[in-house]
Amino acid sequence: MATVSYDVTYSIAIDDGEFARAGIRVEQESRRLRELRFSIDPERFRDFAGDGEVIESDGQVTWRPPRRGGTLTFAVRVSNQRASGAYDARLTERWGLFRGGDIFPPAATKTVVGAESVARLEFDLPDGWSALTPYLSGDSDLSFPIRNPERRFDRPTGWILVGDIGVRRGSIGDTRVAIGAPVGEGVHRMDLMAYLRWTLPTLRRLFPTMDERLVIVSAGDPMWRGGLSGPGSLYVHADRPMISENGTSTLLHELVHVAMGVSGQEHDDWLVEGLAEYYSVKILQVTGTLSNRRYELTLESLREWGDPIDDLFVRRSAGPVTARAVTLLADLDAYLTETSRGRRSLDDVVAQLIESKSPYNYRSLCMAARQVTRGGVPMLAPDIVPGAPAEAACMPGD
Image 1 (spheres, rainbow, N blue to C red):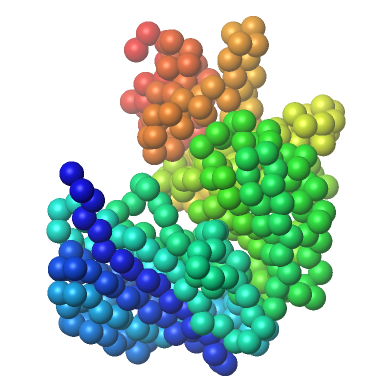
Image 2: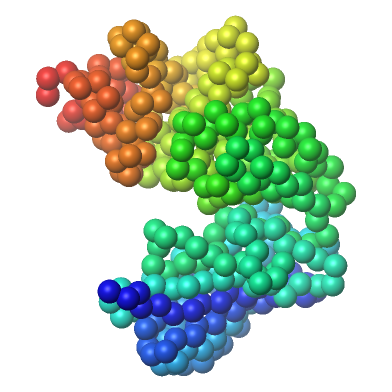
């Protein structure tokens, strides 16, 4: 059966000021895309106009394009300031740094049965500006085809950097890497590339489904002084050390998030954050970047920090909750290795999670561990995992 498709072109135009002009152009032979609906923050999005029917009400926009397609346009305030005063998206006179979802929110669609979009992202930028995205460039340096086989409706996601920027590119195994930052922000792109050459191959072996393209973007103050991941990409602050004094690595933590390609579900965020933090430390130890002694000291520090936590199942995992999750996973790893005489480890459980394509939550972790051990896993019993539901099935023989 032939694929029924329609073309969607996303455009971002940046002039002077704090707003970008965004557009969604649909071209179709018949009315294959019937409706597009998404939620907005009215303080950031404004001036919606388009062909066909455009309805804006109560923070939601509905667009019904004409039979042969049309264009929806709007303005977006790009910069987003957190309560701390730092920015996780920013547009200046010289550059812009943001995620695709900051401009084009997730959308619900109504289409004919089986219809799929063929999408691309285009930029209209000031003279001298260039763009770095998680996508390979197409017909020009400012046009990027968007391909996600797992979605019927594609949209731009991941980190995007535009402006007067410097980019270091390289290949590490099968991964094409691009590291970009605004000129003059003090980002050591070559150091970051060297760090990845040391650590990325180990990460790829653990997460073989990781995208073959990786984009890392960075900038200094007043951007948020941490790291944030996105599909095929991540942001890390220019002053963030590649390895902190306590033996952890923000850069590797976010890389694990990119490799896993999943977000934590509500009340199971501890698992995703715990895996990211544990493997960021474990990879440093496996590659010899951290000595065995320093690795043990790092785990001891995290164990002490997380020891008071009596419930992992909070809405968002951070700080001591994530530390408690790390030590739980470290203990599980040690248990699997010891009881199998080195034949199994947490790596096998993660591989089973990936193969099952299940959401990352406590239940799927239990099921993956049971598949690996062919039985129950006492280390994941409800009386071991703080706050776990009593009906969890992780014990032998159940």
